[in-house]
Length: 203
Length: 203
Length: 203
Image 1 (cartoon, rainbow over the protein chains, first blue to last red):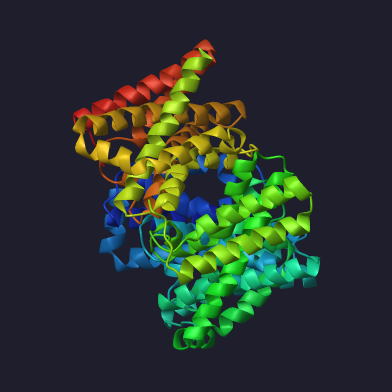
Image 2 (cartoon, rainbow over the protein chains, first blue to last red):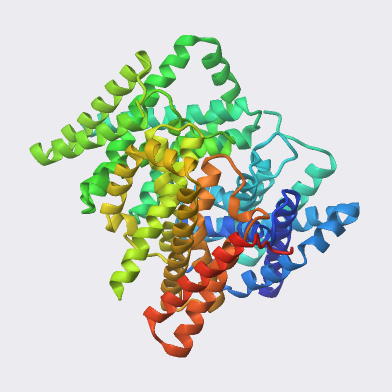
């Protein structure tokens, strides 16, 4: 079961890094920029979570192979970005993987905050923050107003619903694995629905 | 007496959140963006102060009702912003409340830094940082050069004078309440003067 | 020998602060903005290093005379910037001093990370981060895409090579002073070569 969660984590980091790498290439950055924006997008949310919860070392400092793999990925960024740009299906795949990552990181933020005895509302907020902050940093570095704050298809809202699902399952069933999967499922399904039917917040 | 300081803190958070909410609406953000920018503006300075001074949990994690109230506020953001935009008096009121908040947060930064045994100059700097950093983050997210760094009416300078007032009273009278009120008063009066007479730094 | 490293540290902080002050003046900021951007450029990298490694107090909080000197520097910013703008040699000098600072801060990041038992690859990354993050923050505040991420003369790459030199010397000779000097030398020489011959990354 933990293998499943681990697999989703790696998929999520991969998808987040990819979205950073794509943005960086679009802005004409070189290998250093591509790697930095990829790193920040993939690890920004988890790092903020760890700093807020005073967890050390930060998770990417501990899992040192993640940054190494991302460097390898950055070397073939030109090739990756061409594939994603030219094939609508590849772009769709990135969105699907990103939705998985959003769900998983939100679960990790909500879970670690809740276990630290933090108020459920703040735990849900920290879940969302963990899920979306990497993308916020990516957009700030690329000199754009963060995508997630704009009037576009639901993103943070899906993570918020997912984080509450995590908390709800934790309270009713006290099963961490089911709770994490509930968060991922709710976030993922909501997000795909929002993309498919262009659902936006009314206000 | 602590009730007075508590009241000013809530007023300050309210005013800071409002300035974030207004900026976010101007940029066409939806509820998520409005809430996020409101949160960051209201809690950014205090969070940086807590991270620099290694204080955990961060103050908005502990005072969980602040983020909850801000969410409620974000739901009626459209209504609030219309009021502020259409009534010159409402805009003036926001500036006055903001000046109160600036004074109080600067006092809190200077006070906690000084009590942690940090050099007075750095304590004064941390006071200013606590007061202005939320607005800096707001402007960075909204893709603007931070207002506080531009050649405009004195803002950070008022907080700097206020922070030194705090330190001066602490040294001479050793009374925390008087020191905090001195910081708020000096910051507040200077700031209103700067707005009224368009006082800017000569360099 | 430590005097040499201390001297280079002060030179590096001075050069970094200068690059921040110049950018801030170009954007028409006043004394507050100039000081803030100077501070952030000079201390941003070291602060991120200290937060990631959970070192408290942050180094500029401890070395309180650095921020005081920077304030003095900010008062004469107009004069400094005129000199640098009008004399090509002065601009060249800033680039040379900046290359020294880049090398030294990278050494400090790699060294502290390595001593904290962190994986060498992450230690090298933290070295680069310590060297370049101040400049990244400077550019974000000034509403530019960070210089270091753009397709321009090698910068972070020099620091990366320098950080590995530090690690290599530490492993083979176990001499901290030689390792730090190796990092500074490699970074410095590579950077000057890159500027002189307009060397860029091929990808």
